[in-house]
Length: 184
Image (cartoon, rainbow, N blue to C red; front, side, top):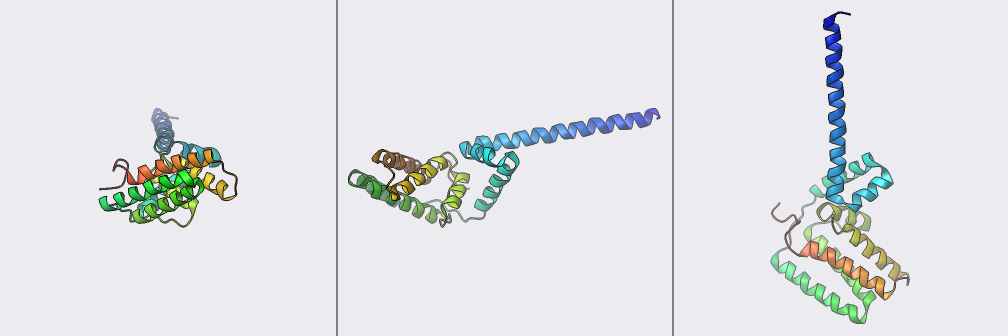
Protein backbone atom coordinates (compact mmCIF):
# COMPACT_ATOMS: atom_id res chain seq x y z
CA UNK A 1 0.00 0.00 0.00
CA UNK A 2 1.08 3.48 -0.73
CA UNK A 3 1.49 6.20 1.83
CA UNK A 4 -1.57 7.96 0.42
CA UNK A 5 -3.71 4.83 0.89
CA UNK A 6 -2.49 4.46 4.48
CA UNK A 7 -3.25 8.11 5.16
CA UNK A 8 -6.77 7.68 3.76
CA UNK A 9 -7.36 4.61 5.96
CA UNK A 10 -6.08 6.42 9.05
CA UNK A 11 -8.25 9.46 8.31
CA UNK A 12 -11.28 7.20 7.79
CA UNK A 13 -10.66 5.39 11.09
CA UNK A 14 -10.21 8.67 12.98
CA UNK A 15 -13.41 10.12 11.48
CA UNK A 16 -15.33 6.90 12.23
CA UNK A 17 -14.11 6.87 15.84
CA UNK A 18 -14.98 10.55 16.25
CA UNK A 19 -18.48 9.87 14.88
CA UNK A 20 -18.97 6.90 17.20
CA UNK A 21 -17.79 9.00 20.15
CA UNK A 22 -20.17 11.80 19.19
CA UNK A 23 -23.11 9.38 18.89
CA UNK A 24 -22.29 7.82 22.27
CA UNK A 25 -22.01 11.24 23.89
CA UNK A 26 -25.29 12.35 22.31
CA UNK A 27 -27.03 9.18 23.51
CA UNK A 28 -25.76 9.66 27.07
CA UNK A 29 -26.76 13.31 27.02
CA UNK A 30 -30.29 12.45 25.80
CA UNK A 31 -30.77 9.89 28.57
CA UNK A 32 -29.44 12.34 31.14
CA UNK A 33 -31.76 15.08 29.80
CA UNK A 34 -34.75 12.76 30.19
CA UNK A 35 -33.65 11.72 33.68
CA UNK A 36 -33.28 15.33 34.71
CA UNK A 37 -36.60 16.46 33.17
CA UNK A 38 -38.81 13.52 34.18
CA UNK A 39 -37.03 12.15 37.24
CA UNK A 40 -38.53 9.01 38.78
CA UNK A 41 -41.06 8.55 35.96
CA UNK A 42 -38.27 8.22 33.40
CA UNK A 43 -36.16 6.04 35.68
CA UNK A 44 -39.12 3.69 36.20
CA UNK A 45 -39.70 3.46 32.43
CA UNK A 46 -35.98 2.94 31.80
CA UNK A 47 -35.88 0.02 34.25
CA UNK A 48 -39.05 -1.49 32.83
CA UNK A 49 -38.43 -1.00 29.09
CA UNK A 50 -34.74 -0.17 28.68
CA UNK A 51 -33.09 3.14 27.79
CA UNK A 52 -33.96 3.27 24.09
CA UNK A 53 -37.62 2.33 24.55
CA UNK A 54 -37.99 4.74 27.47
CA UNK A 55 -36.56 7.58 25.37
CA UNK A 56 -38.91 6.74 22.50
CA UNK A 57 -41.84 6.60 24.89
CA UNK A 58 -41.11 10.03 26.39
CA UNK A 59 -40.45 11.57 22.98
CA UNK A 60 -43.84 10.22 21.85
CA UNK A 61 -45.47 11.71 24.96
CA UNK A 62 -43.94 15.08 24.19
CA UNK A 63 -45.18 14.95 20.59
CA UNK A 64 -48.65 13.89 21.75
CA UNK A 65 -48.95 16.74 24.26
CA UNK A 66 -47.72 19.26 21.67
CA UNK A 67 -50.82 18.39 19.63
CA UNK A 68 -53.17 19.35 22.47
CA UNK A 69 -54.57 22.84 22.54
CA UNK A 70 -53.49 23.43 26.14
CA UNK A 71 -54.75 26.70 27.55
CA UNK A 72 -53.70 28.27 30.83
CA UNK A 73 -56.49 28.77 33.32
CA UNK A 74 -57.88 32.28 33.61
CA UNK A 75 -57.67 34.04 36.96
CA UNK A 76 -61.41 33.49 37.42
CA UNK A 77 -61.07 29.76 36.70
CA UNK A 78 -58.15 29.48 39.11
CA UNK A 79 -60.16 31.21 41.82
CA UNK A 80 -63.17 28.95 41.17
CA UNK A 81 -61.01 25.81 41.35
CA UNK A 82 -59.27 27.09 44.50
CA UNK A 83 -62.68 27.55 46.17
CA UNK A 84 -63.73 24.05 45.11
CA UNK A 85 -60.44 22.64 46.44
CA UNK A 86 -61.02 24.26 49.83
CA UNK A 87 -64.47 22.67 49.89
CA UNK A 88 -62.97 19.26 49.08
CA UNK A 89 -60.44 19.70 51.88
CA UNK A 90 -63.22 20.60 54.33
CA UNK A 91 -65.08 17.42 53.34
CA UNK A 92 -62.05 15.35 54.38
CA UNK A 93 -62.73 15.97 58.08
CA UNK A 94 -66.07 14.13 58.05
CA UNK A 95 -65.69 11.83 55.04
CA UNK A 96 -62.10 11.19 53.89
CA UNK A 97 -63.10 8.70 51.19
CA UNK A 98 -65.60 11.08 49.65
CA UNK A 99 -63.03 13.89 49.73
CA UNK A 100 -60.46 11.79 47.86
CA UNK A 101 -63.04 10.94 45.19
CA UNK A 102 -64.02 14.61 44.89
CA UNK A 103 -60.35 15.61 44.66
CA UNK A 104 -59.85 13.19 41.76
CA UNK A 105 -62.99 14.48 40.03
CA UNK A 106 -61.89 18.11 40.49
CA UNK A 107 -58.41 17.40 39.11
CA UNK A 108 -59.97 15.73 36.07
CA UNK A 109 -62.14 18.82 35.57
CA UNK A 110 -59.11 21.11 35.81
CA UNK A 111 -57.13 19.00 33.32
CA UNK A 112 -60.06 18.95 30.93
CA UNK A 113 -60.44 22.74 31.23
CA UNK A 114 -56.75 23.16 30.38
CA UNK A 115 -57.18 20.95 27.31
CA UNK A 116 -55.94 17.53 28.41
CA UNK A 117 -57.93 14.48 27.31
CA UNK A 118 -59.10 12.75 30.49
CA UNK A 119 -60.61 9.44 29.39
CA UNK A 120 -58.00 6.93 30.61
CA UNK A 121 -55.94 7.33 33.77
CA UNK A 122 -52.70 5.90 32.35
CA UNK A 123 -52.79 8.23 29.35
CA UNK A 124 -53.77 11.16 31.56
CA UNK A 125 -50.83 10.50 33.90
CA UNK A 126 -48.45 10.13 30.94
CA UNK A 127 -49.71 13.39 29.42
CA UNK A 128 -49.43 15.24 32.73
CA UNK A 129 -45.84 13.99 33.10
CA UNK A 130 -44.74 16.19 30.19
CA UNK A 131 -45.74 19.50 31.78
CA UNK A 132 -45.78 18.46 35.45
CA UNK A 133 -43.07 15.79 35.82
CA UNK A 134 -42.34 16.66 39.43
CA UNK A 135 -45.81 15.58 40.65
CA UNK A 136 -46.86 12.75 38.32
CA UNK A 137 -45.62 10.01 40.65
CA UNK A 138 -47.65 11.53 43.50
CA UNK A 139 -50.66 11.61 41.18
CA UNK A 140 -50.18 7.93 40.38
CA UNK A 141 -49.88 7.07 44.08
CA UNK A 142 -52.99 9.06 45.02
CA UNK A 143 -54.95 7.33 42.27
CA UNK A 144 -53.71 3.93 43.47
CA UNK A 145 -54.89 4.74 46.99
CA UNK A 146 -58.26 5.88 45.67
CA UNK A 147 -58.61 2.54 43.87
CA UNK A 148 -57.76 0.73 47.11
CA UNK A 149 -60.39 2.79 48.93
CA UNK A 150 -63.02 1.73 46.40
CA UNK A 151 -62.14 -1.88 47.31
CA UNK A 152 -62.32 -1.08 51.04
CA UNK A 153 -58.56 -1.52 51.48
CA UNK A 154 -57.38 2.04 52.31
CA UNK A 155 -56.93 3.37 55.82
CA UNK A 156 -57.65 6.94 56.86
CA UNK A 157 -53.89 7.53 56.85
CA UNK A 158 -53.73 6.24 53.26
CA UNK A 159 -56.53 8.64 52.31
CA UNK A 160 -54.69 11.50 54.01
CA UNK A 161 -51.62 10.69 51.92
CA UNK A 162 -53.76 10.60 48.77
CA UNK A 163 -55.11 14.08 49.58
CA UNK A 164 -51.59 15.41 50.13
CA UNK A 165 -50.48 13.88 46.83
CA UNK A 166 -53.53 15.20 44.98
CA UNK A 167 -52.84 18.62 46.49
CA UNK A 168 -49.36 18.60 44.95
CA UNK A 169 -50.90 18.11 41.50
CA UNK A 170 -53.60 20.68 42.24
CA UNK A 171 -50.98 23.28 43.16
CA UNK A 172 -48.96 22.45 40.06
CA UNK A 173 -52.00 22.79 37.78
CA UNK A 174 -53.73 25.75 39.42
CA UNK A 175 -51.01 27.39 41.50
CA UNK A 176 -48.37 29.68 40.16
CA UNK A 177 -47.55 30.09 36.50
CA UNK A 178 -44.12 28.56 37.16
CA UNK A 179 -43.67 25.39 35.15
CA UNK A 180 -46.95 25.86 33.31
CA UNK A 181 -47.57 26.42 29.63
CA UNK A 182 -49.06 29.88 30.13
CA UNK A 183 -47.61 32.20 27.57
CA UNK A 184 -45.86 29.35 25.77
